[in-house]
Length: 296
Image 1 (tube, helix red, strand yellow):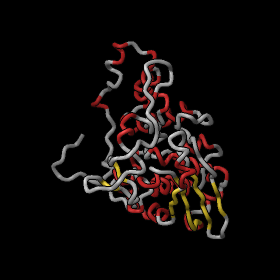
Image 2: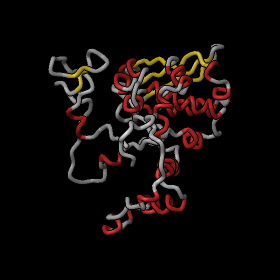
Image 3: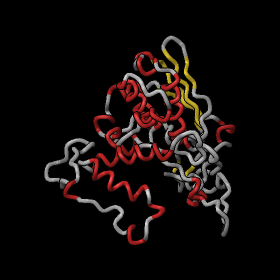
């Protein structure tokens, strides 16, 4: 999860900084990370009340950079509301245009990230993240009839950032169809209250599917439409199946995690304990290990 209003952001201005040789420039020439300049929003400190910053945390529903959640929700809505979008295949898609706010536009929308070479760069590439989820939907031939079930079916896993997925020709072809645009002051003003994003998919025949403005996608602290607990349970099981060979062992491991707020201090001591000898073996998602390397 991620809170865009975390205290460290006070020292990381998003706009208005002056470039210097001591600063690290990001995509746009007028954006300088860690440079001098004002915070993009006020930091409010308090000693009482119930409005804690942790209550504004956003949960990632699978593996992706959290600022891409708006585009993913827009994509899922387009797939659910227009079943022929997935069944028509990638060949029928002419263009995908994503409009986002700063800092999303300048970070995960960086044009250089349309050619990621590692999983570390792929999971901060809006083009890869959106294309990978769309490719999964196309390969399935369609998606479930609700956004909730579609999120669960298309949830991005570690394997979606492995070597095979990273250099998948079909995913790469979709990436080349993606364009980005900055939504300007209107979009920027809506962050960090929400993560304003829109996605428009244009087919070869000229028909378009538009998400409209997405502000609070599932996983966002202000989202009220999704069943968050159900989505997080799906995520936990997806990740747990990488480790556990038996469903019963996974359920036993997840039970205290799902009840963590009621656990006693002594129960917290072993909350992540499990039988390491029974761990499922998985081939390395980055390709074969070099000879002589350790096998976990």
